[in-house]
Image (cartoon, rainbow, N blue to C red; front, side, top):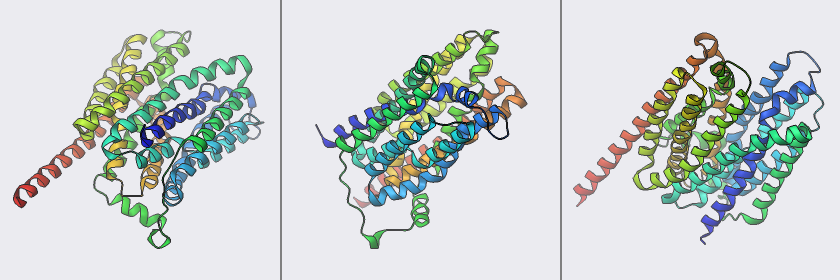
Length: 408
């Protein structure tokens, strides 16, 4: 088996283990905050919000720095740092004595972790570019699988053994992922000579001058924003559709699982398809499909209609996310994969940070159905950006063909 493919399969397994571990504690984090209590001032709801947002803020700030370090010293060390650093922080969460300590640990976690971007950078750097769609689609599948199984396992463990045991189990899972990376993942990395190194800001200025890079980061931000903006109200919307809170948690989990399942399957198929037909076309098709499946969600009249449409959004994500990663990889300057995907992770974190506030504000102003309308607008803007990228690429291909003909 080729080395890059062997690495890919191992890293996909690491991705599943890591993402499942991180998402394992999501179902009960607000309940854990309530159990710990608040030592100073502020409501449980306020500190619960900080538990989620603090990690996103620090990850947004630290990811570009880790990306530059990865390009100087190797992507494998950064992946080990993200896995083992995450393991330590999650174990410490299990020992927190109040909500303030939990927020502090989550804040440090955001500074140390970033498994998804580190994995993407390592895969992108070691995979032949013509196989980018397939490889990054498989990595995205690992993410979806982890997201699907993590909360389910976490809920069961939290109920059976208590919340603290879930954090410790998660730490063990992340630690095992780190060990697997150390012993089984291979990276052929030659650090650039000292005289060829560029400083932090110059590296990112040069990157943003690359054609289409700024547009692709816009796509990353809009995708992260669009898939996260409904999270604060989805369970509440199910309660409204069911006219009761009974069964709302179960059907919300079913909706998330169905979305993740379709996302994982579609990411594999559409990643390979994009290698054949063009990543720009798959990106545009996925964006249009997102508009078509989010718009009707504002008008559903029963819970099962929403479950069905939410599941279909997994297909759009399975198209958009691998295609965007592949296009970033295709346009990444040689030796700058860490920088490229570090900034991508920062942009995604910014989307996750803004999304809950936008969703909550839209629910207040327009009602819960209006949140799905706002999401449709976000994907509409994403479609416009994708169309711009697609047309620009078509123009470049046409100009290249004309130049070859003139040369002949």
